[in-house]
Length: 424
Image (cartoon, rainbow, N blue to C red; front, side):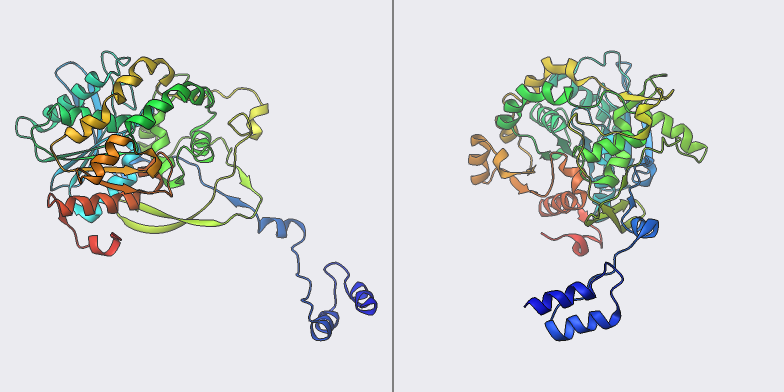
């Protein structure tokens, strides 16, 4: 054994071990040769990856955008895709916007014949109302009714309501009050009364932990992914734009991007894209656009600093002229939170249309819903590989669930792509 060690010491000299030495080690002692390590800048470049955090325009996923003016003098921003079949009306969660439904809308309209209508609710996105501070359940529910009546007139097509978090609660309120005469289905995504009510006590702490200012849209998108708010980079690049506004002009980032898009250029990047110098596993994300489906690669996000944000070279320099903050101050809406969720489970079960509940974890189910699910009063699907923003994290799986649910209820006609992508 002493001779073996000595021979190995003589033959091993960093990365300069001779070919003869490597062969001798392998043949005589069964030892593998030392790997050749990259040196200098060339070796380092092999480990460096850049992630693209630049914003993406909505027209990659939706076919048109429109501002709907209701009788009360309010203007609601809506995005639409699809040309035939029932209308899927999407209601986003608190602080999000209609753009959070971008990938799901493109994918579901690819699988079944339907129209998708995503709405910026009051106080969110590019919607402008006479009172952006009233986010009560009754007010938001009435807004949805007014939008449908204004957009489709006295004879609306069949409607399926789909809502996430706060939007899911509002969808239930709309359905139980029978505000839409042509309602034929309801889907609620990751909101359950018991869990939601318990989470309210810690919501202010969560909101205080978010950054108040971003130097650029790129940085806002990067935080969105790194913090885990949205785990899908492709979705974050289009949806985060609807959640922030410029501090100097109070213009929404969506409007800014729209103006720049018309001139065929994006807002100037702050060059704050993080250079990731550690090897990371690549994960496949699905590029879901209205033009088709395509596989792309993205690296997994790294963790943020203890204060909930990350440092960039610009942080030590003077304050930039263009900075962004949140479109809505959710902390000031606290008085409306209980009204969104109280009695939600019983109201959901009382809706007399086909219903589906999509959850990120089965632990979110409360007693009333557990009993109702066992009695077959609604269909439930759990997607544990996602976070709270289920429809953004795994839009292809949510689309498969919705397509299967709607075809089983015989309310939509599947396209030729449905069998190919549906796994249920």
